[in-house]
Image 1 (spheres, rainbow over the protein chains, first blue to last red):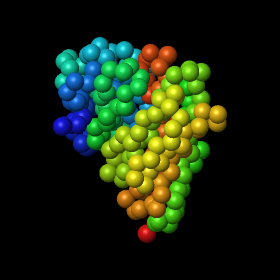
Image 2 (image 1 turned 90 degrees about the vertical axis):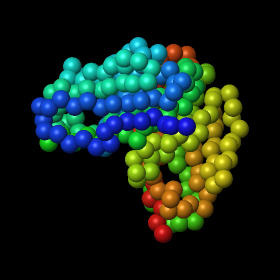
Image 3 (image 1 turned 60 degrees about the vertical axis):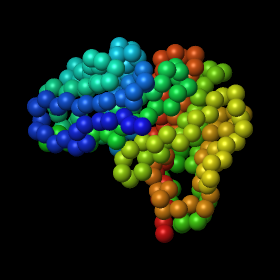
Length: 115
Length: 116
């Protein structure tokens, strides 16, 4: 079975550019989560969706960040304009409905570097 | 409020030694779930185990074992006869059933080095 698929695996861009990260959850998983991982802050939950609807975006750092889930098999996390402090590994995860007792299955992450 | 503490930031042991990773949690809920994840050097996060608050039985899976003690709010993870491939960052996590916000709270992780 295919796991959570993220693209790109690596992204290097200059500050001020728009960055779009993509995620395909596991088929049948109703929940989708976006995380950011840095050495300083560890794993931070940015936003999550249930049945394509954003439920909690309180972790989104600022208005430069936006996320969408137009359908059950695709989500994007966009940063516009990007800044060097956005450099991190961004993970997407999905889970079955539980609501809270289901493990989250993570993609391989996107390593983002903003120069 | 829910909280997960992994006090050991980094541990180094020699191969074949046993090692225990500590996890202490805080929750007001009576129904909750605990998880362990592994993040090897390649970077992906791998789910290892889930335990619900009503099941205090210890779990063993090969060289891995988990000791859940509600009395001390701990969910410790032991690797027996460690191997170099066990080198990774290990995260303990908690979610509350009553919360209904479906979030999992992760600890800061413990970086484990297994030395050959």
